[in-house]
Image (cartoon, rainbow, N blue to C red; front, side, top):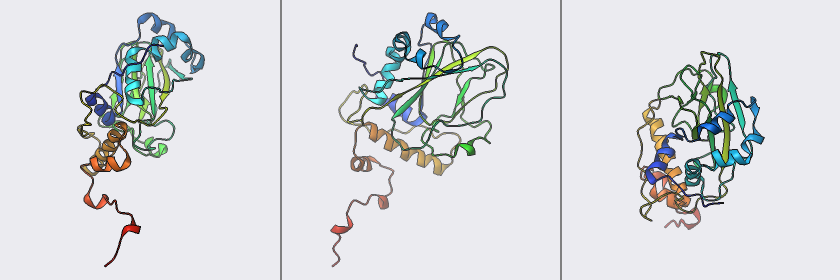
Length: 268
């Protein structure tokens, strides 16, 4: 197999650390999109594991380049998937996060959504909440939310793939018609902790994380917490140890930077 080359830069990765998603518009060609539009609703292990799907989608240079950048050189491929098909009007889903969210600041799983047909606003597009991917949350507590400031509807063209950090808040939006809306979901996984920046770099010197604007739904305190999480994520992706990460955390209060073991304390 040909070498998979990273495609993201320092700024691209910082954007992902803050927002938790990347959208690759019209990546898959129309012929293959057509083949994927008539799948049955439900598990899609055979489809996702087929040589054609691997070649046309999973290892497409644009998608694999982003995965390589965020999960390292020997990432784990999807071994299954699920086809979400909605073919009648629905009011939409509640906000939710899949699995167990808020597990930490690492990036170990990337969940992808592939759309083999155009998705317009009336088709019930997937909605995501940028910046929500590292928030520990009770899934039941999300269900009462309606529209949220900063939410993004994935109104996309056929062949588009959205890449998200596992745990991002999402839902299917209201669907107003009987047009089938198809989305195939699958995940890639990290195989080992990062030892260095695994993307395109201009210098071996690790730049400090440059923060992005606060999410519109956050207060001052929460935006500060988001910043701290982003710094930790960036430092971890750069291969820094916990001690090195603390040294690079410019926003860490002085009283939180203790490094002296109690056994070394000597009272005069």
